[in-house]
Image 1: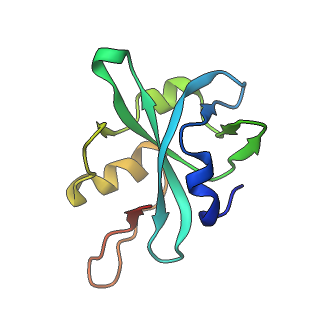
Image 2 (image 1 turned 120 degrees about the horizontal axis):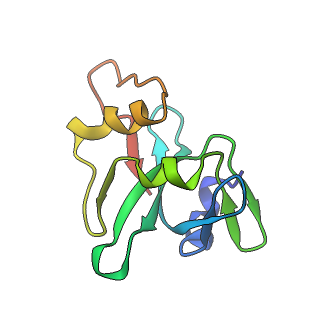
Length: 118
C-alpha cells in the first residue's frame, strides 16, 4: 500500500486488477476523513470520447513497478459508481460508492462526508 504522501507520484500510473489486467489510469485518491488515510481511488476508464472516473477501494491494494494493483476485477470496477472526468462526487452519492463494494458506510456524527479528494 502506498502512503498519502506518495499520491502525486502515482497519479497517471496504470491501475490493474487482481489478475494483472489493466483497468485504467490512477486519477486521484480519496481519503477516509476519519483517518486521513487513502481509502478509494478514481480510475480513468472508458473510450477516449466517453471517459469517466470510476471509484475503486484501496483496501488490499499493492504497488508494483509502475502500477497499482487493486483487489477487484476489471468488470466490478467498470460497473462501479463514477463521475465525469472533471466532476465531483456529490455527497448524496457517497453511500452508493461504498455499497457497490459491499463496504459499510458510516458518515461522521454530524453527517460529515466520509471521503475527501486529495
